[in-house]
Length: 163
Image 1 (tube, helix red, strand yellow):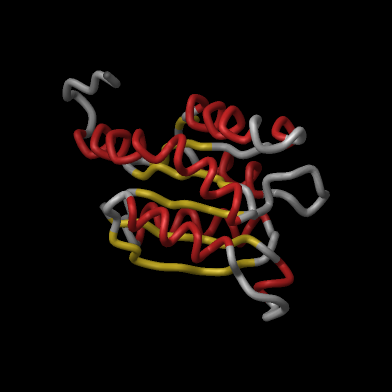
Image 2 (tube, helix red, strand yellow):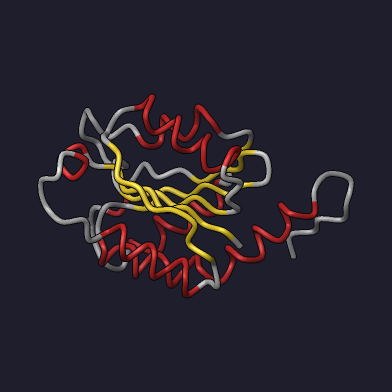
């Protein structure tokens, strides 16, 4: 399983500050057994995010693209919109499980607008921009992600029971 990790932050893309969430996602992906093919930091810009998601799903052929940041209510939080623009199908159960996993840890769990979806045979998942949240959410959804990727690799016309 090949993975790309994208940190979405305008300030970090300008070299202001230290990315802590990207490395947390790298560790999470490796714990899933993924080869991390790429890491990138890009600005909170819908077109740049869309381009990166398409690139890693189509050209670099990653099985899993994990993003961190840009999922809140701020006007520049556009990661969910960019993700929806490039996916073929949503994976709402993953996003629901992520919010559910956040609930015991924060009273603001319902403010996450994170999206998960499928582009061709690539699973794209938006994580929040907090390393602590990545650990909490990752523990909940991690066991299902390799299975989801395996189902996507089967391709059309094959038996693809989710269970």
